[in-house]
Image (cartoon, rainbow, N blue to C red):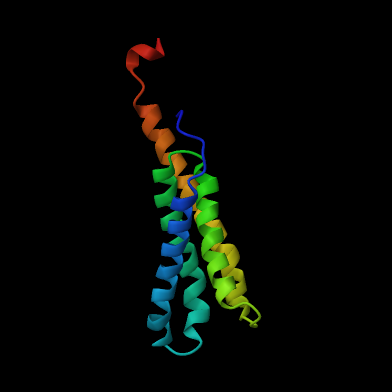
Length: 129
């Protein structure tokens, strides 16, 4: 598993932007179920989107998987924080920022585990002697 150890900043930034765009895309759908619906829909959406893009970025980065996933979640959180700076947010949205980071971390973790499993099954039988 000797991959490059550099941080792929552009990839992490792209993943965070795409994750936040996915979260924003869910908002109009949630609002169709009432003005309070986003308070219940957005937090799990944050986990799912940052997990998916944390995984995607981690796989492409090839190293430092959890760090790359964390960066995806942090970028997504910072985008929304920047857009709402100075505004009072519902508690569910504040919690969602933490969920974004945790989702990204989890996505990076799963990407790393899959690579480890793949590499461990590719060991030649003669190499185990």
